[in-house]
Image (tube, rainbow, N blue to C red; front, side):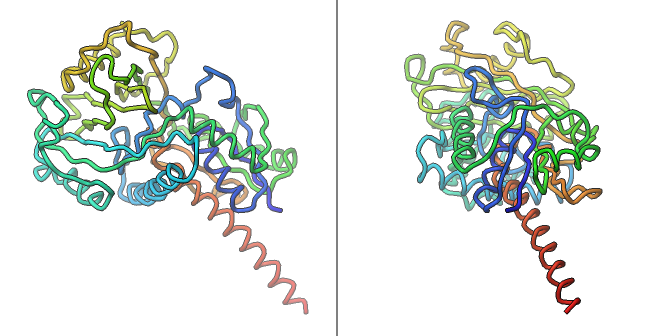
Length: 381
């Protein structure tokens, strides 16, 4: 049986591992920590985890080739999430109405209009400026238009536990270990040590080291978690988002991200901060938290009902971006290594699609070697 070592146990690592297990491979997973310990959050758990069509709110695609791949990956993930939500218990996946607000009529922005048309086939799609008043959004904020569709929203903690259990139940082996240095420099050692045939690099920010890729860098994000039980404002069951419009980027860094999490929580965000890697000691009075909250309250006045005492948790995480876009490919210098990293703020949206590509790359390599062996045997007859 072909064996695979997966480096990293975030959403990218565990979905890759589970896809490989389902394809019949033996899988070992190594990471410096797993999500089995309470209150020990992984990067994947501090994400908002609203499925979005690329380019997403926190997406930073820089070329059409990467964007095309991301659209394919995200659709694989979309239908996988919808399937899991209907067939599996305990996944933490909630298909919800997601409303995307705009600072101008969608038709007046070529990029946004193209994006809206591309996703108009999704369940529940609707383009209607009345979505502004339907959700009591403040028109004085500068909102001019909106469209919506059904989008999977993931309770990340619950889903990560589900993924971990699925991998374990399907026979994966776990080892707690941090991989230091480039995988390329130690590939032979790792292959022998773990008795595997391939290594899949899902190290997230750690890929700066494991892939010796200096283009990997963090973008800090922050979220506030409050109750969504109807006690402070009418319970919100839809996601309200106002993306960072490229036209306004230079003068306006505001993003609105209001997201129901699970049954009774609400996430308020968000931020995209390059060059910031501090995640500890962030309090309610932090200037960026205050700025973020006021921005969302100005957009959605119902949030003014929440005070500091209502905040359950301040969630801070680092999104693993890559300058040269997401990397899902065989290592050019060693066909034993497959890379899957650089997803930034779109890890959940792209996870299952990228995992499928990783599995296909390994299957193709295995079949190619098998074919070559048979041809060599045939030539000797």
